[in-house]
Length: 346
Image (tube, rainbow, N blue to C red; front, side):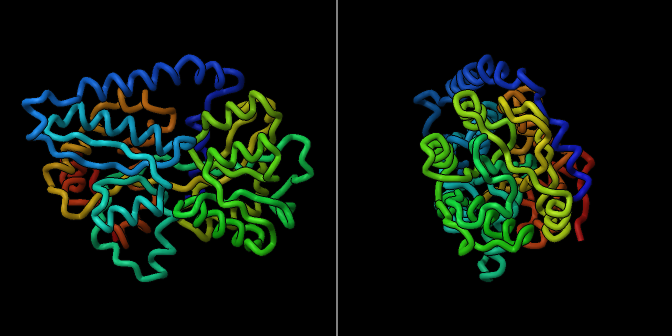
């Protein structure tokens, strides 16, 4: 897993081109998603025969929201018998719980959300893996004039740690403990969504903001346009300690200039993400949903810069750990065997 840092760089957008990219394409991307969804809407005569599925995504300030909505549109377009509805949620932990309770059919989550459930001996038998893709990249953000220069400086400060029910909250507690021995007793934790975290930095009500999403993140781009910021970078020892102890984390380097005014590369970690579903979805249905996403790369990759990582090249990343607890769905296995890439994971 430690060699994944270079892969993080592979999806970078350099320098000033980032803001230009978002200004010119975010509107196009949103319109495209709406048009794709409109094209997939059922006619009145066919509506009754459609199978409606819910897909849990995340906060509108994060990457799950965009990728989930885009993938739902692809599924609607290329699997005419379904209507997949992407829903905004608190993300990882909530999505897992909703699928296990059969309140949702599909969900997105960071694999780092699994260990606490495993420790609590939660019954995960009701969920199955569809695919593994992009990393959700940790952005520890401070105002440029802040005296906080490193993770160690978080002591006594008001630090955003993620919203209740989110994988970000689970991860921040685990990561800070591993890399610096910090607990939530060492600082003032703020249980905020990504959007609230950005607002807190703007208003000066928090010292350290946290957004965990595949870079470049639209909300962080916007913040940097109006308020000078810095990103907190890990030391070599910190990132090495983390990825050596947690197989579902990878080293990520956010290149200099990704965000306005942030000079110098930022070393951080990414949590590998998965799409999963209810165990009782049919093999044929999951097979078709996979084909919709994986066999239309041009449309998939247009959803978001990080969507490129939802390819067969990355589908087994961290699978050795994940499938011990959440095996691939039979429909996913059928598709991967058909493509000649299936691996028996031990």
